[in-house]
Picture 1 (cartoon, one colour):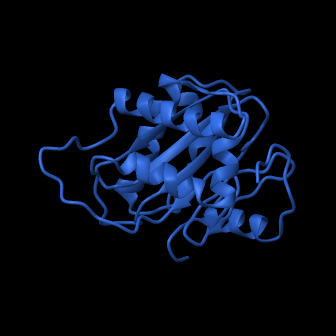
Picture 2 (cartoon, rainbow, N blue to C red; picture 1 turned 45 degrees about the vertical axis):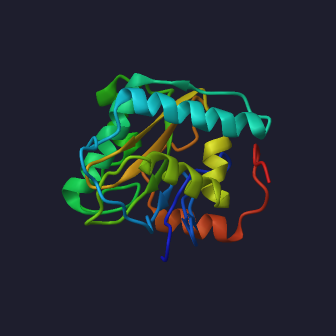
Length: 206
């Protein structure tokens, strides 16, 4: 995988993928960060206020594509922070922890999400040795929008969501839906396989 690794579950089929500046993947997404910035007197992770601003930015993109806005959800924000901190701790960039097998789907109940609430993830950063900087959330969102699979998840008819980035420079967007979009743990490699041959999907905006 070069610049990006991503995954987002397809409503009709559960899988993920990897993308080239964003590499294809279905169910969530992973994009490898390609730039660094110096950090001085900066926050070390995404705050609630910043995540709310990120959802506003995402909603401006959704509006430009004729898609309904989503709400910020504090439960999803806490889940998103847990996911990026897990990537920092274990040194990976994927939708499923390669050592523990956990993913957003398997831990969602710990954050008050119910069995009929589903989370589709996009991810961004380096597997290791990255860092947080002001504006990383916008960089991640723009990278996701440049790739088909990531874009699919950003414009999917979610009802809510959140963005979070960690001190190690891992970022995720978690979209909340009731459609069963991502109903198990998947890897970016599975997503890559799906998007490599997938036709136009329901709710896909080209």
